[in-house]
Length: 233
Image 1 (tube, rainbow, N blue to C red):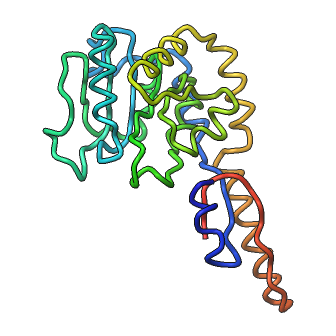
Image 2 (image 1 turned 90 degrees about the horizontal axis):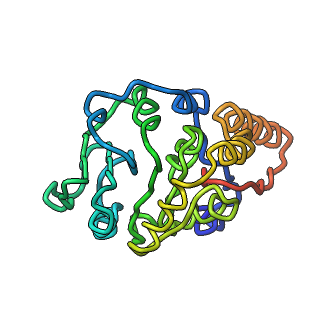
C-alpha cells in the first residue's frame, strides 16, 4: 500500500495486488512436526524470524529484547547479506541457523511460539510489505512486528499482528502473543487469508491483463483499478 501511494501518479495504469501466500504449504506448520535437528535442542519459548539478515534488521532491538528476557530463545533463519556478520548481536539466546529451503520452513515454524518481524524503520523498509506476515499467519504463528506501515495496516488494525517498536513494547507484545488463544487467532487469520492466496491473486492479474488487452483492441484506455496490497506496475 505504501509503495502504491508513493508511485501511483507516475503512470495511469498502476494496480494493487495483495502480498500473497501459499496457504497449503505454510498451514502444515499447524500440525505437529518433528523439530529440525538444528532447532530441536533449543528450549522454549522460541521467537522466530525467517528472511534475509540485512540492513533492514533492527539489531539494537533484537539485542535489547534478548537481554530483557535471557530465558527466551530467538531463532533466526536466513542468509546474511549487505552487512558484516560481526554486525549481528551475539547472545547465548540468539540462534542464527543460516539459510533454509522453502520446503523446510513449516517444520521450523511449527516449533515457534511467536513469529517476529524486527525490522528497523529506515529507507530500506520504507515501502516494504513483508510477505512473511501472511506466511507466518498461515503457519498459525502469532506475529509481533515493528511499525512497518504495511504491517500496521491491515494486519495490526485487524488484530492479526501486535506492533511494538521499543524493547519493552516488544517483550510485552511477545508475552501477550504467547498467552493468546491460538484457535481464535487461526479463525481470524483464515478469514483474512481466504482472499490472499496466490490462486486468487493470479486470477485477478489475468483478469486485469485481459481487460487491458480488450480495451486496447477497442481503442479505449483502461482506468486504474483500486485494490489494497502491494504495488505492481
